[in-house]
Length: 299
Image (cartoon, rainbow, N blue to C red; front, side):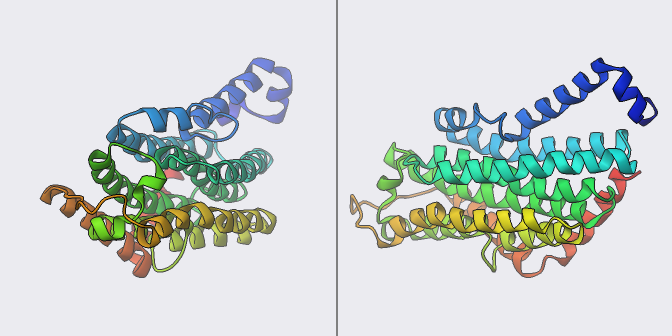
């Protein structure tokens, strides 16, 4: 493919340029990148919670894996082209993080809030793509993206498992109705708290190490400006994530009735939270697997 994409070929073929633009737009829609994100909040809010959980994890992970495979393997990495990819993803990353986090602040529905959160998380992941675009597929940026996807998958699964149990009992997705959940369902509240802390990127959760790896790769490739934007956005995100934590633990319960959950659900939540902690405390093994997987993208 790369042989047909020389600088002269791009100049001589508007159709080729259009095809590349459509590829970026299609993948942007898949991963919920700004400005192709408009479907996400309504779908996340309106879909059944298990479907929302799948869309937030499976769809996004597949989208980023395909992007790495297509842009950095099928198209190759000549210097003139890789720098263009890196710049495109850096700009989309900065916009996506900012839009997702700023709009999430005003949300009162927890599923809709996580919809905008997923847009911001896609922005963080594109920091890694931008770093790869300035180097190669067998780069720390690729390792960081793959590690981030693993951490994000475990974190979001845990969060949505807790949300499913709580919302099924409350028949409500409103954040205000989670008030006092620390007293009504301590295990669910604790699991959701850990997952929200991970989404912020606070230690000792997996999200902290995921952002550390991606930001480190970006700094190595002179993307300090993008890392600064990402860190500022992480501070913004702490407001709306920790607001949910505050409501659950410091708010007054709207009812004294306990929120019960099945054994299977509690086991699934415990395993997800255990994974979130292990990736945050001892990330080395998963990082080695990410390095092996990254070599496949470069082959």
